[in-house]
Length: 144
Image (cartoon, rainbow, N blue to C red; front, top):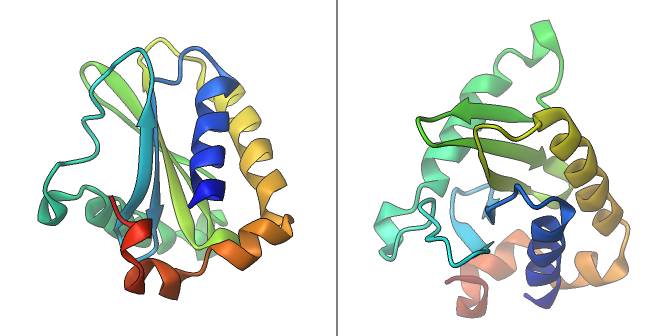
């Protein structure tokens, strides 16, 4: 879990406009989340069955159906009244990284920097040894 928290902390530091980050496993469960400026992370519910990670996972699966035509999904973004929700899939980590930024934020810059950061963790042995999907499903310390 230390590696997951470190990734999320590092993502928050990439740019001042990143308000909140979360990691969702490929089963749709939010593994961990962090926010700054004492902002309530609207993405994560206090109740397990209200976890929005399931909807993000379903959206990723739907968008993935277009991969044969348009290519692999690198990032997908939804624009909301107050914020943008960015989702960066990392299949080699079996995870979706979710960022919440203000509507005025420059997406290309943030996507570029955050993708490089997340990719840099995939080669670390610490990540491979400490994060396995089966661990998350069986070990309560991985769940909020």
